Length: 333
Image (cartoon, rainbow, N blue to C red; front, side, top):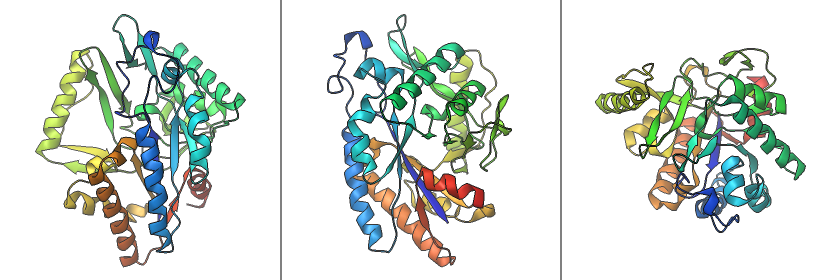
């Protein structure tokens, strides 16, 4: 059994929606803070030693931010790569985590741009080219908010990205209302199967002939009244912008994150994914903020050690893979 752990390396507090690019100093120190990223690196280094004592090598991938927001708030697309790439790459691998944040002068906030195809394509291409010209030729990506559409998938494929790790099979989110101004966290993977595939250029959720390989993240079904109330809230938010395609339900597909593993029963349910339905790998994605919280460190370690124990009970060997290792492993599935 292979375990893929990755970090969406966003700044502290995750959102920079209120930071006005016209009022920033143009320096890293003057805008976004990255204490969580540094804390995660230190913690992972310590955790690697714990696994080494068990005869296991701990691998992980950090997807670093590089996008229009980073350029405007920090001075250059490559600012975060320049600051942290060398430190991270000594122990772990690095990928690209572009958010489609766009500044709205009218609303005075950053919002998720998912309609203006020309803008989206231009930003992704300019960012990739800038990273490459500054010595950061990225090969693996994880989109902000796990968002994709036909254009973004085709653009990344044409740029030469080998594999993307954004798909959340069976999951859909109409977006959340941000202070009554804009919607964030919109994505749709409702028709995607939990198997790696080369997407179709006219349907990013289906198999096709694009060169890029989409490697879906692990999702699992959760049910109950809490889910029903949550999806009703999401549906109401969707209806506010006259999108009636999202329907409430008592069940939904959720990714493996620390927020979904707080209770013991959640932990056991997640561990049941090990080897289920011919699954050859499972994934967990994290944010740097997670490891500023001591309780979440406990949740993370409980999950990993329970996973190791579960694998041993089933007579399975467990390995921790980063993005390049998982990409090479896929053809052997």
